[in-house]
Image 1: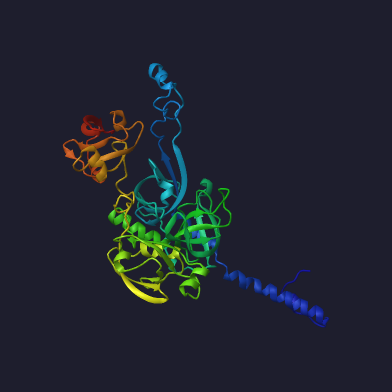
Image 2: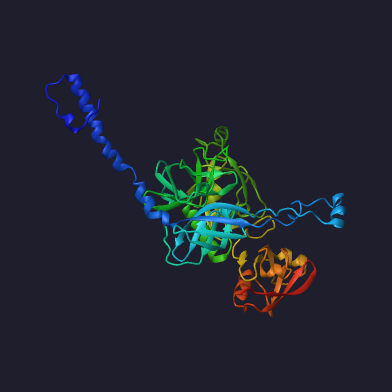
Length: 477
């Protein structure tokens, strides 16, 4: 039986039939009202897809890929054969390529994407909605948060509006636009299914969990709310097959922008460090510590001379609040600490011996295993279009090993037929001087090369191991 609004005009019918008709009419009239509450995804896609880009990267074949494509052990019997007769000519492996997504946040060409999309890339190409393909410069990336910043040479570009990921709620509608499997401008929708998720490999990101269909190639694309604002960067999926299985994770845009601003301003990401090992509070542990329910982060160990030790935090303390923010579980603490400005003194509320106590901790900078600030791979890695090399600044340890007092940049990637390769320069060489100018940084080298005369040889001092040597390079016209 089908119904329309005329069916509501019923006269002299049986009560049971009358009730059924009225119920059907009510359901029919309710459909448009329910539809009005659903977001208009058509409008969202039309308004925002032009600012979403496809990202493809190319990685040169690794060193030692000649011949059979792998290195033989030093004492292998085939080595003597190859020394006498040469290695067979095998087809060169094709450069590795990957596909991902990104989105434009400034009309002069700043693009956000995932770090894993562009990591170790020798060449990055951004394809716009008008099918233009532009070379992108890697401004920097941060593997801990999986955020990367790119720059393309363009102006007047469409951009996406940034939202506030802190106001997201579970059950809220969201839309993803990206290039799954290389299929440009694909839109998928769903809801926020959880907030503040901590994944084993990313303890400094409180991920947004959604049921939006995200697949390989969606990485780096925007997650939009119903106002068309970016609230996250699609980053990971939970999958046992490699494909979408109903759970995806996005980096909150507030976290991503905090990282991006640091990359652009200082070249690395500074994170707060407390210096504790923590664990979850179970139901039994909660009872043993006098808590009404499991919550907080249980301190298992305090590192010597750390901010926590100086503040008086002890093993067995349960951190309930940090800098005024409630700590619901152990996984909630690292992102809060990481976002705390280095050098600030913050209150830490702990439960000790059944009593609450507020301590003051002065936050220090998170260091890597060698004691240095954890860098973003920023402007130290740049594509040198003039020389045909990709370089980064030397670390202090590398300078000490090579006996270089200051300056110098090491070659980490090369164009196979570029000017440097034709001059005999190799990957791993250190560029110390171009012409009469000493090289102190990757940025300086790029600027210097851009100003060199084309078609004329210029002397370049490189260091290969312990041996310095000059080579003449001619920049292409």
